[in-house]
Length: 110
Length: 122
Image 1 (tube, one colour):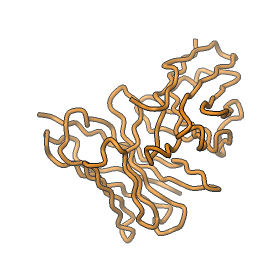
Image 2 (cartoon, chains in turn green, cyan; image 1 turned 135 degrees about the vertical axis):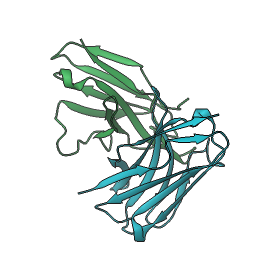
Image 3 (tube, rainbow over the protein chains, first blue to last red; image 1 turned 90 degrees about the vertical axis):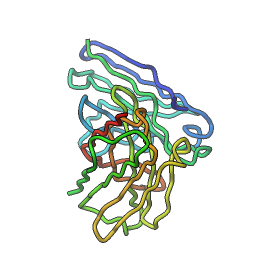
Image 4 (cartoon, rainbow over the protein chains, first blue to last red; image 1 turned 180 degrees about the horizontal axis):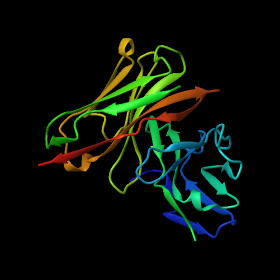
C-alpha cells in the first residue's frame, strides 16, 4: 500500500468543478513537489501537472494543481465527459529514497 | 520527437528472472538532467514506481523490491534494461518505462512508453 493516499473516486456533472486530494507526509509531499498524471483505460499515464501547479503545453487550463503542507490537490473546472479517467499524484519520498504514486482517483462524469 | 517502447516476454514462470528492455529515441541518457524510470501497474490497481537510472549512471530502487531489481543502461544503443529476479504471480502487471526530466530541480515523468503486459504463471 502506498504512503500517499487519494480518495478512490470523485464525480460531478458536466460543467461542475471536481477536486481530488492527495495526502502524504513530511517525508514526501511536505518536502517535495507533486506531479499529477491522467490515465485512460488501457493507455499509459500522461503528465498533467508538474511542479505542483504547472501545466505542460497542451493541457487545458481547466486543470489546476495546488499544494499545502503534506497535501496536494488537483481541481478540474468545467468538467467534461472526456475528463473521465484515473488520476494519480506522485512525488519523491526522502525516507524511501524513491518515488511514490498515490493510490489513484477515478473521476466519473455523471 | 521523444518515444519509448518496452519489450520483453509476455509470460514468465514463477521463480524465473524477468528481463525487460526500454528502447528510446529523441533524447540521450548521456545528457545531464535526463533519467529513465520503470513503473508497473497490476491489473486494476495503482501505479508503482520500481527503479530509475540517471545520465551519470546513478541508480535508485523501490525499497520494497530492491533486493530483486537491477537497472542498467546502454547509451550507445539508447536502451535501458530492468531485471526482476524470482518472480511471483504478484509481479503480474503492465510494465512502463518513462523518461524522467529535471526542471529547476524538480523531476517528472514526461514521456511514457505504451507499456508491456507481463503475466507470471506457475
